[in-house]
Amino acid sequence: MKYQRPKGTADILPEEAVAWSYIEDIAKKTFAKYRFEEIRTPMFENFEVFSRSAGDTSDIVTKEMYDFEDKGGRHITLRPEGTAGVVRAFVENKLYGPEQIKPVKLYYMGPMFRYERPQSGRLREFHQIGVEAFGSESPNLDVEVIAMGMHLLNRLGIKHLKLVINTLGDQETRSAYRKALIDYLEPHFEELSEDSKERLHRNPLRVLDSKDKNDQKLVADAPSILDYLTPESKTHFETVKTLLSDLDVHYEVDASMVRGLDYYNHTIFEIMANDKSLGEGDVTVCAGGRYNGLVEELGGPQTPGIGFGLGVERLLLLMQAQKVALPVQNALDVYVVGIGDQTKAETLKLVETVRQAGFSADQDYLNRKPKAQFKTANRLNAKIVITIGNDELEKQVVNLKVMATGEEQQVKLEDVYQNFPALFGEFLKR
Image (cartoon, rainbow, N blue to C red; front, top):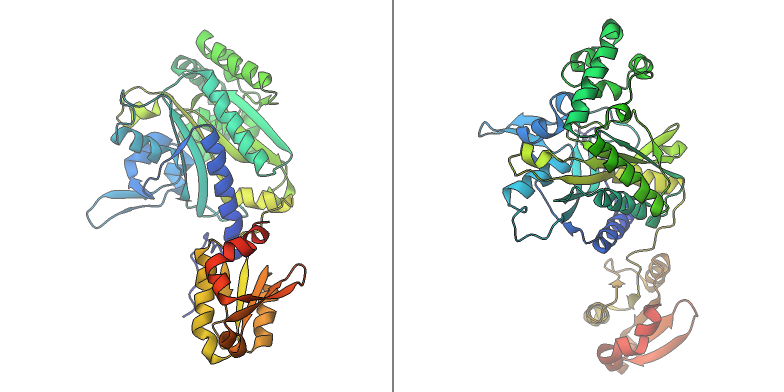
């Protein structure tokens, strides 16, 4: 039997993992500047965590979730996105308590799961980096989260970015707009796709998000939510726009954007890139928005929140397409060549000495001849090669070669063991 990875998953090989680690490291450093702290939640949750938060009319709940009954009869779901699990943890662990400094700022990284047709940058097991901030309704926080997303993508070297924003308003706004949208779409009911027919009276805003070409034509002239904003919602959105301009963050307003999850209200946004590697036209790289009712929906007190998420696989495709330079990680500082069986113990001691001194080191484990060992040292781009044979062992010395300059010298074993950082540390840190 030939064993293969499940459809829609990928093996992240060592040379690829370098790029993953780099992205995660840049993300952590960026989030730290904004005082966000890491949270780690389970990869599976009770089904209701997502059905209540994402909405029972969303594609995620109706079509894409990996859900099953476990051996205890519990309805379990592999997490399809990060926000709901973080909100559940926020509520369950009472991070809303009076001792917590508000807003509570959190970030997460990890795998998510959605059953959909695998395609480039969109797998069934995919990885997401996201942030959530709880406890403030201020539009300043909206803008900080958006600016942080832009800052992260800029630090990663992404070009041709476009920020698109919209508002879904407050509950009063949504109620008035919901009625207007139903009134507009009902005369076209028979022309709608089956999914949109089902959603029309349950959540008509989801019709605006339909991928069906005919649905998109029908909603092209639909009423705009911007015409139904309450004074408070309008003020919030106008403040967001003003603050973005104050930060010199260019944006576009798209009144038809609703996002794919039911929990959003007020500010929503997508950061897009135009690159053929991700398909034709603008493709969303990072997206999010405000969700002032979600904490309450999952059993907590009324607590406003806002966040975003980005897919790592899609981000990597974009970085590769734009030829973003990645740093070389796990570079080899020292390779020790041992010649003769009697040097095996000393070779191991040398390698461990270099490692304990804070540098990377490697040696031959296949009993290869000196020529093959030197060839390996070259292939690994070792900065220094230390050679010890039976004669050197008897004299208690080693031969040391700086590969960049070709400089060679003989060094006492005692000096290597006691003073290696002092002798060669500065060179290796360059």
